[in-house]
Image 1 (cartoon, rainbow, N blue to C red):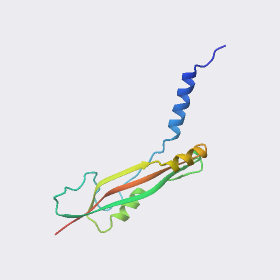
Image 2: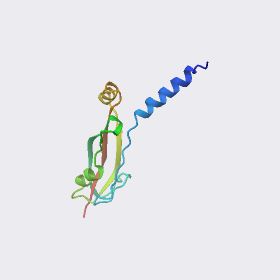
Image 3: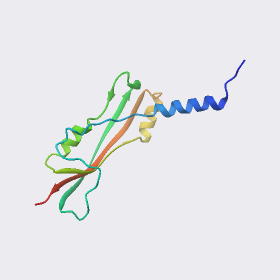
Image 4: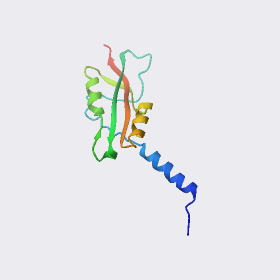
Length: 127
């Protein structure tokens, strides 16, 4: 009779736990009416620059079986860009806090939530 090696069982358990924490985020910026760039504005440029930050949530309900609440990043950025010439220094990040970790583990990872942070610089060229 064969027995399983404890290291193999532990490795499989750790891989399962690590995979359960993944929550991807896809977005499309084609609807944004201004150019979007990850490069920051040069400090010496003759432009009005205003930093912006948007926080929202990305939630997966029961491993996606009961749906997913994903923010529409393109629409949020397009709304923020109204009246500006371009967006520079654009970044999108997902972060987990202690409350997200607690929610995931107390619900046996049936509810997975991440904070989505959208940051950038709104740029208006000066005449």
